[in-house]
Each structure stands twice: as C-alpha cells, then as structure tokens.
Length: 268
Image: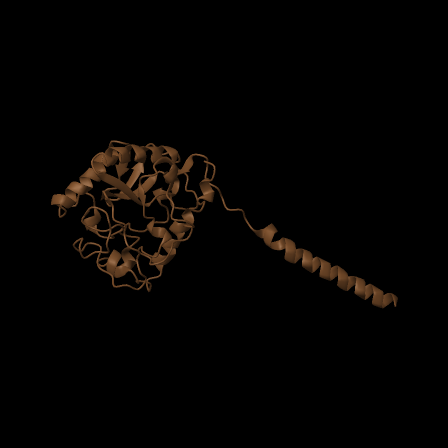
C-alpha cells in the first residue's frame, strides 16, 4: 500500500505540474506588444478631414496581401508631422482639394515582410500593375525595396491630392484583371486622386517626381502637392512623387516596430 500510495502521489504531483504549465506557459511566454511613444498620434485626431486609404492594410498593394503589422487601416504619425499635414490640408481645402494618405508610420515587421516577398522571385502576382517593366530580381538593386524604411521613424507619409467632392475609391477584388500603374488614368485601377501620371507605389522611373516625360496637368498636380507640402516643412523623395518626410524628424535614428492599430496610440 505504501508503494501504491507513493505512486499515486507522484502521478498527482505530475498532473498538477502539467496543468500549471498549461495554464501559465502561454501567458509567461507571450511578449506584450510595443506601444507607440507619446509623441505619436493618430492622424484622425489632429486632421480629421484628411482622407485615409491605407493600402498596406488591404490586398491592393505590390505584394497582393495585407502587410504584417497593419492591424487597422489607420494613419499614425509623430505629432509635428500630423500638425504640418493639417496646415497643408486647411490650405488645400480652400482651393477645393483634400489630401489623401496611402501610408504613414510603417512598423519594421512590415518592412521585413517586404524583404521576404522581394526575395521570393516566384511570387509575381501583382507584377502587371505595380512593376511591369522591372525584373523582380532588381528590386533591391534599383532601390524599390530596402531593409530599413524612413516610414518606421514616424515622420514620413505617402500621399496624394483629391479634388472635392471626393468619390470613394471602390474596393480591390483579389484576382481581378490588373492594368499597369503607368497606363492612362482612365485605364488604371480607379483612384479618386487627381492624375499624377502613375498610380501609387508604381515601381517605374515615371514615378520620379520631376521625370521630364510627365507634363501638362499631371506635372501641375505633382507640383501642387510638392509645393503645398514644402511650405509646411516636408521634403520629397525625388524617386517617388507620393513620398514626403517632415523635417526635422523627432526620431531620425530610431526604427519602431509597434503595430499599426488604434491601441498603439490610445490616450495620446
């Protein structure tokens, strides 16, 4: 009986230990999500009239799927960048236009997702729209994909201009026929933006802000965006008409990885 009792006690002890591990282990091992520093805000709380079409929270982007880290389609920026956009917005509203943002703060995990995708040369599901004239093996060498992004520092934004009143952009349907991003505006995926000569995230030299092949109304629209933002302290990336960074940056050397979600800036 003593041997049986000892065996039963050992089994009971093992069962309790197993239950404890099962109950505690997930909590103990789970890492809390990083939160945004207090200097970050939701753009909506500063500039509620700016249109938001956060492409990386959807499947309509150069990868064809929602990007890691985009929990909600919300624009998050450092406070000074958001306030500068609001200043620009007020000036454009008086002229019958509105800003529209495609991407704002971008977590490092999203950039890592871009890098993994770029290394998978077999995945070219969205090539016909976003990089029809670029060999995917050249995306790193040509500077379209990099292992770090200024967006992760919180003061960089991708955006365009919309003439008011704005018609909503229809949702992208996965698997629908694709048209090149540099096709005439009437043929490209519908976007309520003014005509900038290419669509957003077009991996092509035609996206260079001052490309000489872009003229007329398209050049005027690019210059309207550039001039309006420059007045508020934004600097354009010459290779992308949509890409602007507010200077001076609050975090010029820090690449954050908190998720794009309302919770990340709750209470800010």
